[in-house]
Image: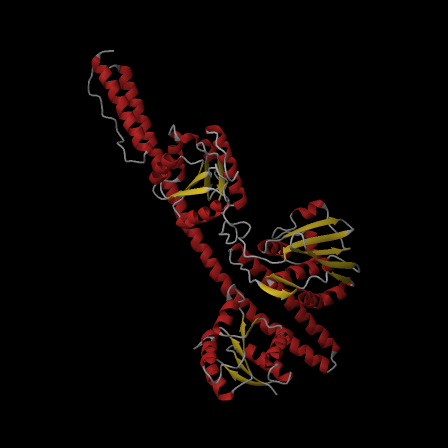
Length: 123
Length: 469
């Protein structure tokens, strides 16, 4: 069962995404801010990280940079989730080290597809 | 006339000449003529002296009003620019704020739809899917409005990448299928097998296709829709043609079709809904990528939309604004040709640079001046073929520079194109401008005007072959 770390501060979004992913057979771990996200990426070694970008304490861009800089976590694929969808957002996410990018509101089928593609080398 | 009166007259003439010279060269000048205290002076001469003094007062008063008006304009411009920045920031925030609740509405309703299906509760499933569809509709409207605001704020950007066109079409067709089924429409896709990958903005091409397809199926009832994709080898472009057998449009209805907030008429809105932004956005996206869109239609017979896009899109300037064209190369000259000289008078260095880059690509030689004194001096030194003159400049505004140019016997022949933020053609023509253009400038219009007046000026003044004409 693939392990996914969901880093998201909005409670409703977190609850929804987490339950929908559990239904599809994923094991979900949760972090509510960027700092917790970095810690949990190291301690629980997920197969993939879903990272909201506007996070408290440490934002998603910085959290991604730190995770991608650590030898023990840099291999973990990260999908950035952002509600901005303004010009330059995608570039900024990829620059920070994200492997993929998706916009909110989430199109669940499209997100699942992206998760599967990134998990392929593992499963 | 006795010698005393002759001296008075000469004094008046000399003072007047000094003042005219000072005004023309932008130097400070004395507002009063020296009074004639001689009581035996000729009454006509005294009358002349008084009239000239009155004229000077009027000029001073006019100048003062002018200065005040241009200061007010500058303040209004600053305010407008601050407002525009605030609007962009508001948009970025709004985009986030509006999408976050939509995320929950769409996500939870989808989850509950899955639950309802599992429990075989079909009536719940139907109601929930109505919530979901309405949510998606609302999201579509929000996205359209945000897109249009981004376009208006000049914040829409291109992300160019290589992608598989066939794959994208499959994806769009799959997304549109429920809408087609609902209206009982049959979609046929004709693809050119030679078409594989294109280099363009994937999201925007997808949105163009989606907008046109959803439009076609909205206005077609139990009909057929034909989507044709062809590679046009000659023009290196991709042609997307979409023909439906729907309600069609009259020429009047087609007139404003690609304008924002316009639909065929208000009954259309009541019957079919929508914001009336889809086609305006579609047209803008086509033009942004260097392509075009056109339409033909017969009421009751159906409609055909044709989109042309370059197979390899390049970063090009936006259609309405002057921006730096990175790919165009300066034109080269043949021997014996003298490039047209254009004097650009504008206090804004960014604008000077834009004009420099853009007009030199068109083969003109550009010299820039950033204030009145410099401009007049340069005009005399280089005798340009055309002058472009910004109205809004600190110290001395464009109108007074125009007056100076037109009052100089050597410079008055040079055609002057006024560039203004406000529509004030009447004033421009009255003061002797050749033409007036509103900022932001239309590139094509301004380059054509420069070319036209260059040619007129050359043929009037000298017999030299002109480059870039």
